[in-house]
Image (cartoon, rainbow, N blue to C red):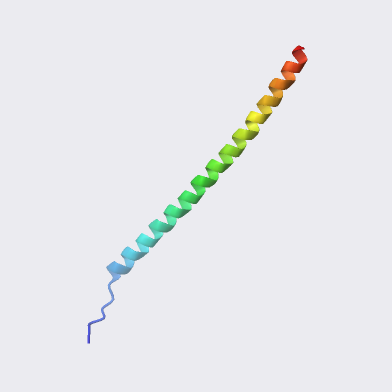
Length: 61
């Protein structure tokens, strides 16, 4: 019969590895989400600027 000893170092290593993997995916998710929000706000800002420029151009005529 094999000796079934419990290795704390292996358990600790696996827990740390799982935690690092989960943190990676969480960080990736947040990064992509912030990029999407940034792109959306940039589009809105450009539309507001375009509207203001159009308004100024109309007043000049």
